[in-house]
Length: 140
Image (cartoon, rainbow, N blue to C red):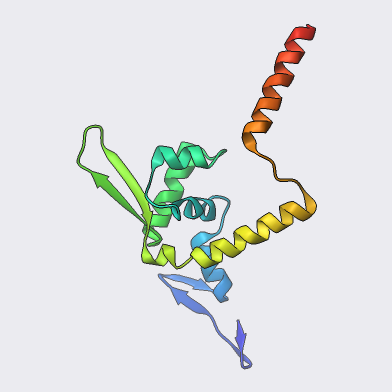
């Protein structure tokens, strides 16, 4: 980055970044991390709860994202000594500090969807698909 005519770089945890946005994206970038963090703003979540809330993510990918977020200090993983074992994930103070950013990203996404797309209730979409399947079977 160029500040007052000087080229500067940021070194953090063994990685060199070229600007502050690069730092941020290094921690929350990619397809899934910000979404996982968003759902954790609601409070403690178990793996299965997160999996249900993030359609399209595989168990392997969710596990990888959670491990990376934990390693980066954005979330904590609490294991309860129970049978079967219970694990809960929650935001750390660093993770919570991202809340205003995540809220603004969400507002931007809602605005983009409203102006260029549609927002509709998922259960209605599922019901329409079920009816269409039933109708298609009846025509055969």
